[in-house]
View 1 (cartoon, helix red, strand yellow):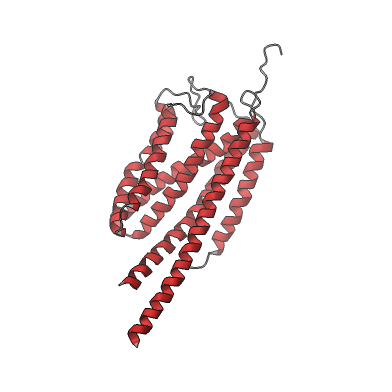
View 2 (spheres, rainbow over the protein chains, first blue to last red; view 1 turned 90 degrees about the horizontal axis):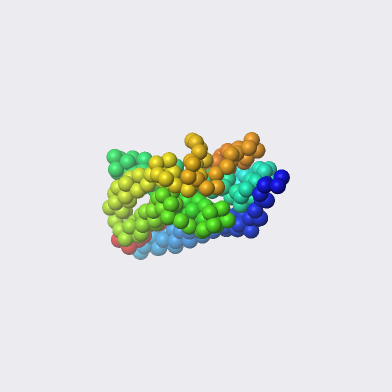
Length: 59
Length: 232
């Protein structure tokens, strides 16, 4: 008991580690969602443009 | 891009569940390590992310070969997806390692062989995306990307074996003890449960994110094709 070392208090680092993990993963998921949403909007706009161009050609 | 498959929706939900269970096991189920204290709990996520990221980089190298042989752009999409998700996971590995190192090694960073090879690997794949950004022609971009990812893929096994080949202070978790290591520990049965579950959980999360990223790549290609059609 005399030479037993006390366990270091490293809770702050542990909390920081888990917070960083969730923040990074959350940001990546958000980036996937936002990029997908923007691309879907682009696709809709381009499809409308394409349809409008076809109409002009047939006229 | 087709509507989201049911399997992927199930995988999304499963990923959240396994991440929750893995967090519970790491925080509450696994015992506190006697010397390092609570910070040792980040080890479960550190290894989980490292394992999946390194596998992802190797997978990307395999897809590079598939692209170079077949010239099918599908393999390029798979490769980009694998590298992007792996890059995020490997960034987490490095940050978690650094957070762990501060109280255990008394420094945030040291130019140890393992840390150096890990940093080089991360930089190689950041440069991969910079290279792709600079090339407009999709086939040329895919060809350059494939060759780069194939050579870059060598960095994954080098990083993995760095602690086994060189003198390093980084602990070896699997495959024997390193006498030079600082911060190594023997896992108890409960720690092993948390450890192996974290490996499983991060594999599931990786597959889920990877699949979602492939779908994003398909949508990107579709939009690029439409842009070409409209501007012609």
